[in-house]
Amino acid sequence: MNLPIGAFFNRIQYNGSTDITFSDLPAIQRHFALTVPFENNAVMAKKTAPISLDGLREKIIDRKEGGLCYELNPLFYSFLKQLGFDVHLVAGTVFVDGQHNDLIGTHVATLLHHNGRSYIVDVGFGSNLALQPVPLSGEPVTAITGEYRVREVDSPWGDYAYEKYSDKELTLYYTFSTQPVDEAYLSRVRDIILTNEKSKFNKSLFFTKLTDDGHITLTEKSFTITRNGHKTQQEVDKEMFHQLGRRHFGMNISLTDGSVQALLHHKAQPEQATT
Image (tube, rainbow, N blue to C red; front, top):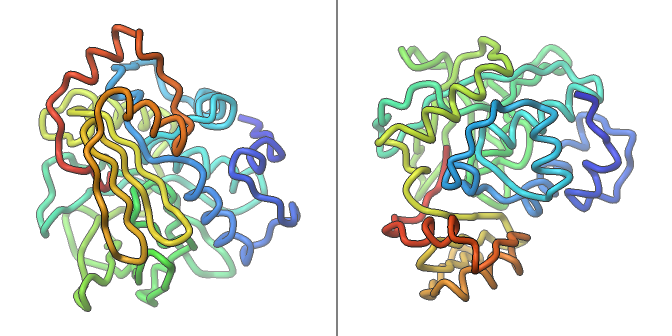
């Protein structure tokens, strides 16, 4: 895929220098997180076309939609690769409360090599984004979203662990292997997320996106604003769901669309965070 860099910058509302170096990546990742939602609309619409980098360009840049990890990170990987960075896609396994849910290898991120060091670059993990390349050395990094580190582990689920400090304690979010995965792998991940009963992302619609001081999340039943660590939540009906979706996430779904109406009748689930 030949990614149109100018269109990519317009999509993420980035107006800085286009002569991108490694030191510019935190700003690029932040702009991406502020403008491209983490959302499961395609999963809930049961879209099964093979995932391709060309298709992701059309979906996220041309149609200004968002996506899940296996869509957002491959697009960002394509951006980095086109600019000449040494990158490849990797797969990981998400953990919740120290346990994985048997959806092994269904998180996709980017591994970047620069000046003899390796980093994980992740723009597709809900609101838990480091907003900068995280070194695999165990050195912690700090962002407005919290403090993160990646360390080497001895695990059957991967060689490294992506962790975040929560209430002064480290929380394991996912493990990953450094082995490359290819474009065909993305469709296999999508199929698991779409059909597996243990997937959190095939139960109800949700959209989440970072803000300057926190993040916002919209589900079929609620709209949550987290600002400087303080959370407020309001209930929403179908009309408000669409209004908030258009206003905050650029979602434009017709209230008369029968397929969408069917989606909105799913039982609401707890707020989704990551995959």
